[in-house]
Image 1 (cartoon, one colour):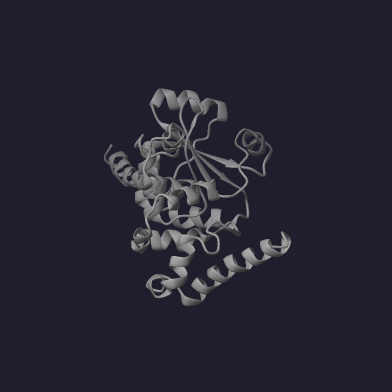
Image 2 (image 1 turned 45 degrees about the horizontal axis):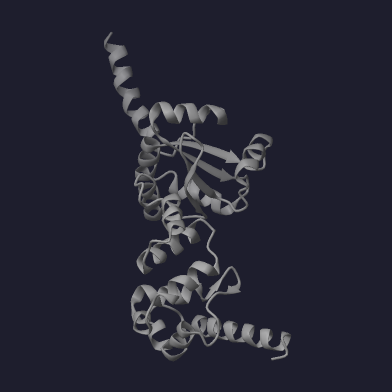
Length: 254
């Protein structure tokens, strides 16, 4: 009896440690997840990846194994991995059409996508995204519904742009719409300095055109931008937008 008790005390803490060392992915069939999610009242986190994906390996080794991340995601979500290069995974991906990896899709028990992020993240960033999923007013799905209603302000559009960017769904429309709501003096705010720099070029396309108000602000206040970014990178963005404008002028014989 004494030997049995010693064995239990030795094994029990090891079990606790094992549960906290990484995100645990459920070994259920995809269809069973939704019944389980409804039963446990939890959101499903789908992790789309494939073997040999460098960013995926980075997340698996450095982020999933963080104790705080593991505890948070294991306690709050039903985690399920989808290897899109396998037969089963490719069939599941026919539903979601994920193109970039890793992609993390958060869905409810009815199969509705409530949040989505694409790419690799730090521990703090990945934790923040998980916390946002648990707040109904911070999910991508909620922001989309507010935007469609037409009742929003510039602060909302600023946040919405970054949510769409994290989901790899941002286009120039939201960027232009946000900047159009600002006054010239608003550009000097740190958050707008970062916004103009980051989204002047997006997905290799010019989203803040040459001679627009934010472009001119960046051109005339390069020292302000150098508080955050390298001088050469600032000049590269300005030149790229100018070169694009010249190309359009030549094309239209303007």
